[in-house]
Image 1 (tube, rainbow, N blue to C red):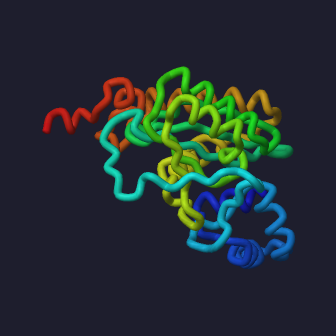
Image 2: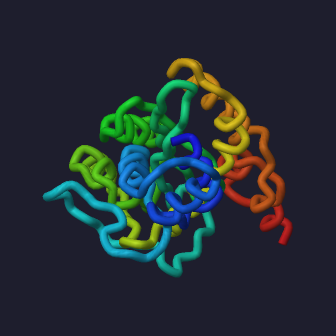
Length: 237
């Protein structure tokens, strides 16, 4: 699972067959059946157009994708969320985060030992204590299509947008966040306990928001852009 996570983070286009081939080439005795089981356990799917990319639970409402050709030009215009796998020295946990697209600011995050909706709902509630977005974008995973999750958004009069099947790159800003979290933090540590992982990842998000300059933000931090509401380079222009 560690090797799968590293390969997937580098190459999110890898599906079961290609992942199996790569691991075999590197000397690991694996087969497609085992790789498929582990990738499902980790919540991983290759990023490329194909049917049934993300399956909502039966009876869950699917909302249309609202962001095609939309210019993102201010904070709290669009928020999005996603879940990723975080390896530990023994076992693994899941991480969910809520991000503002314009500023890349991480409004909230939660970690869980199980892939259920509750920790996603808690992350959403925490983010909404900071502000209210115009649009909230997710994939079609069962955690995000659940009545518990969408009900909060509807009650707050937030427009719900969901990535179309085979369009995981619609959530590309969060995908980039996961790469940063893993290469700059997770892969450099061997977490022994859940508490250790929670503490260290919390320290990373504080650094990411408040200290780490982003080239795409004119080398400002996400916090500087989120709380000022604009890029300094745009203000000068």
